[in-house]
Length: 212
Picture 1 (spheres, helix red, strand yellow):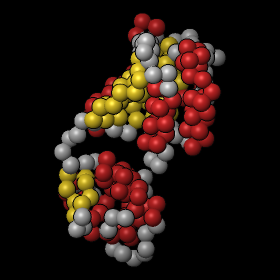
Picture 2 (cartoon, rainbow, N blue to C red):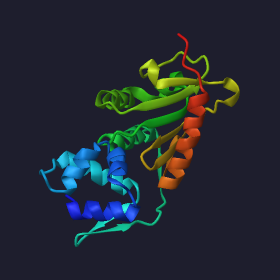
Picture 3 (cartoon, rainbow, N blue to C red):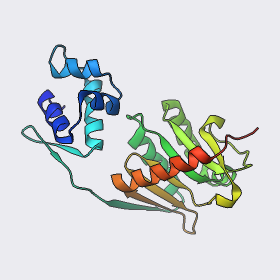
Picture 4 (cartoon, helix red, strand yellow):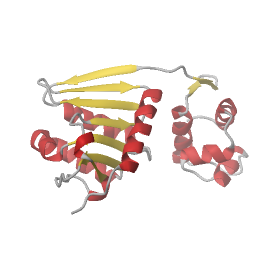
């Protein structure tokens, strides 16, 4: 578990105020202030929330204890085969389960997806829903096939709808290719993920709520 000194040093390195750290970690400013002044012993969950926020912003915690800014990393992973979508669902859940970050999905044709996915993939979706991971899905206007709660969906006009699904979660951007062979390409890079996240949000704001 990181120390109070590391939290203060990381804040200084990022030029963050206590208010900024509170916002990014989902905590209150008085709690951050109390923690840094050592008025009370922090809970493990509190420290973990702070650490995730600081690491997401580019801080690396080192032995010593110390802190430094990590350089931009780019990792790619290819999942191939009939279980590639299931493995993607595993990765999405493991990445987001301890965060409050949303999963964003675009290019979904749920009927085709459901026919291919199989029960194990649907079980993974149920697990994610039960865990309360915020989810936003862009599907084609008029598509009435909903696997998830309808409030997770918005409709994109048919002229602008692409049937190549992509997923944004954490620092990852993933594309599902129907194949053959079926394949998932995962790119892990904070800048790339944020670029596609902003693009997704622009499309989300312009999209329509489904009409049942």
